[in-house]
Amino acid sequence: MTDTCLHCGTELITRPTLMRLLLLKKPAKSMLCSACLNQFAPLLTTHNCPGCWRQMTEAGYCSDCQRWLQHFPKQIVNHRALYAYNDFAREWMHTFKRLGDVRYGQVFSEPLQQLIITHFPNYTLVPIPSSQSSLTKRGFNQIHVMLDALNQPYDSALEHVGSGPNQASKTRQERLSSQQPFQVIEGRQSSLPAAALLVDDVYTTGRTIYHAKEALLNAGVKNIGSLSIFR
Image (cartoon, rainbow, N blue to C red; front, side):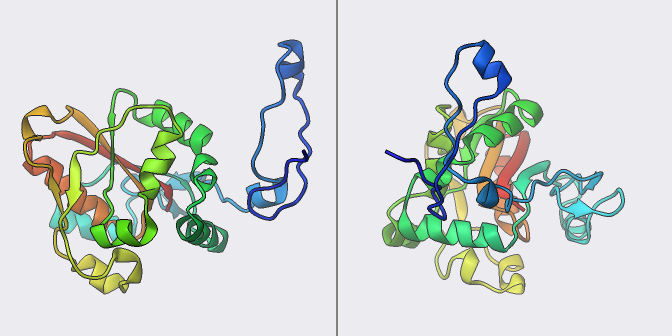
C-alpha cells in the first residue's frame, strides 16, 4: 500500500538517511510531503520576544507583552512556540478540529518533544482545558490528542467553568477583556506539581494563558511556563 501525505494526498517517497543505513534502521515514516511540511514556519529567528516568543526584528518585549507587564509585572509568562500561525496553520487546525483525525495532532510529536526537553525539563505538562460546549461539538480536546502522542504523562489539573462563545469566535478586544474561565479541579490544590507547563494549540493575545497561569498561581504553583504549537 502506497503511503500518501496526510494533508494533500501526494504520494510519499521516503529516503533513508546515512545514519539509519549504518544502524540498519528503517527510514522514519513521515505523514506529510515536503511541500506541506515546508509550509509550517518555524519560529527560529535572531530575535524572539522573551515573553511570548513572537518573531521580532530587535531584542526586547513585544507590544502585547509590554501591556501584560503593566497589568501583571511579576507574572510575565515564559512562553515558547513551534511555528508561526500563518494561513496554512489556520487551515491545518481547522481541518484537525473539524475532521477529528488524530494524526493531525500526532504530526507535532517530535518537535514538541524536543522543545519540552530543551526549554522545560522537569516540568509537568498541564493542558489548557476545552469548554464543555467545544467538547460536545468536537468530541475531543485537541491538546490531549497532541500530548497523548508524546507517550508522556500530563496533569489535567484545570477545568473550564466559563460560559459564552469560545475564544476563537471573539474579537481581539473581547478576548483581552474576557473573564476567568478556569479553575483548579476541586481537591487538587494539595497535589499540584511544583513546576507546571501549560500547553495550548495557538497563542494569540495571551489572554487564555494568563487566565490559566493565574488559576495555578492562586492555587500555590510558583514555577509556571507555557508552550503552544503556533504563535
